[in-house]
Length: 335
Image 1 (tube, rainbow, N blue to C red):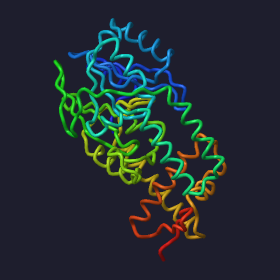
Image 2: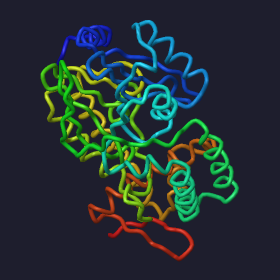
Image 3: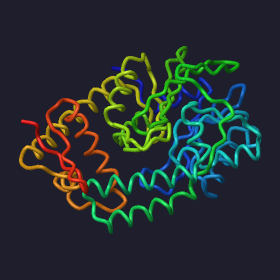
């Protein structure tokens, strides 16, 4: 196990020219970590949400390093969530910076408003089919729409392939597509320094929720988000990273141990959900209530994604199946 502390990891990253900028968000997760790469090109990894407060703090933190948003030459977007990309359009207008992101997400990022509406329609259908009451679904849709102003469309001028390298003056970053938390999650690997910029793929203090979403190709079939996320974590587990820089909270210096712990927790939750289904067939909403009771409206889709993700694991193992009566889907055991 690494003896490097989170504070030491930040110092080591800073010595390598990678500086954490903690930008405020209006969301429960708190501040988002953006990363300034003092290199050529001068690069910002993620931006924070589209708000005056976030922009002011970004300008201030860049100023502490002797820069402004006008100086940025490249913006790297790690994934499609609004707390990570909301200021991209403003930054590009001021600086003319290039924008790099995984190529499979380029259309999704460019069509932010249209795709956000499509995502809401998808989520409403999924919630209703999972037994969530209409009034809860309508309330959550209203909350989701109110959040959209924190986002922004993103014109990707440098689409990246999985495994593609970005060459800087003093380093090379390799982009690896690691879908799960979102379909577009991408991590950036500095092999020479063994530093991984991972955004929300791995977070030390909370599990990254694999949200059920439509795939990037625009089809209406939902992703098996947790199944995909587990595959992505297993790939990251094999990387010889010494420091993992996350999208929220402190750096990770023991990613193998953390991933093993997360995999074990998912396995335990899967078995708990199987026991509930073995008692009687249940909808996703009924399973979520059995696990957590009545949660806040803003958490309803998060908890549903959690349940469906673990149910997908059980379906793939052949231990349960979906019983669709045309209105709602219930899970039942196959035995």
